[in-house]
Image 1: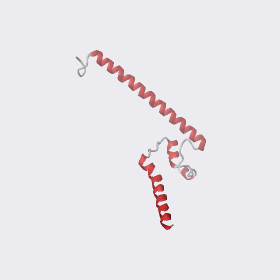
Image 2: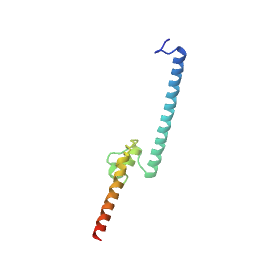
Image 3: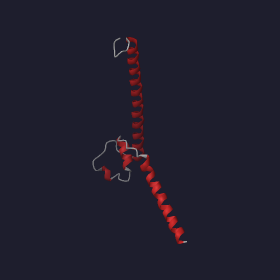
Image 4: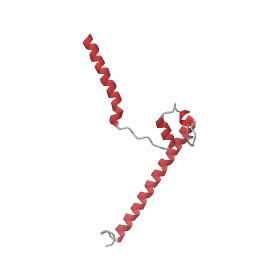
Length: 107
């Protein structure tokens, strides 16, 4: 018995498995990184954005959504929670419902 109660063969198998998992994780990370780089390049070309941000250039490209600029810069925007996404439609629905009830009471 050698490493934490494992036999030598078990430990070698464990080490082999860890190396394989690390290689898979690194490959997946490299793929995601390449996909993001490709997306940034496509967005830069589509919206004619400079590769390097120039100070003061924000005023010139203020018509572009801030989320898109962050995405092109490589800063992933934080995902909104489902609750916050649903708040706007629910608020609109509640507002429409209350207006309908007001109209119904007037009739």
